[in-house]
Length: 112
Image 1 (cartoon, helix red, strand yellow):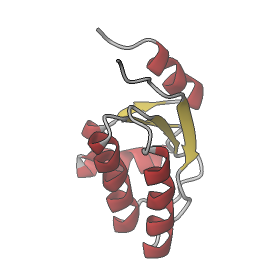
Image 2 (tube, helix red, strand yellow):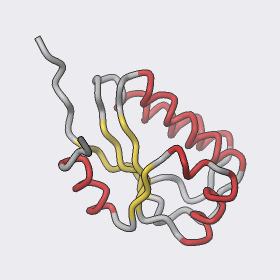
Image 3 (cartoon, helix red, strand yellow):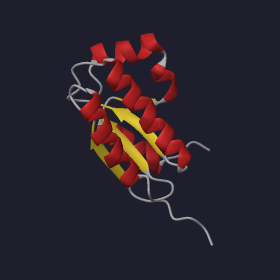
């Protein structure tokens, strides 16, 4: 018996994250990760501030995905936010794409 790979989900990352947003978003992520091998594109198009809560939330999402053999990719990231992700080294942990469509397509064409 083999595990089924679930469909790819797109989630809008919060514009600004505080401790309350972090908790609520992570709960939504955990519900999606209930299925094994869940693949998620985090849409960063509305993100305006990459503060410590947003960084911790992003790392917590990655941790959840890893626990369930899932995968997370980041898309539509504003340049200022991408610069922060690069400066902090967090960008090395994620594949990033210019558009959600590019990220979605990347799941259909896995690297062998």
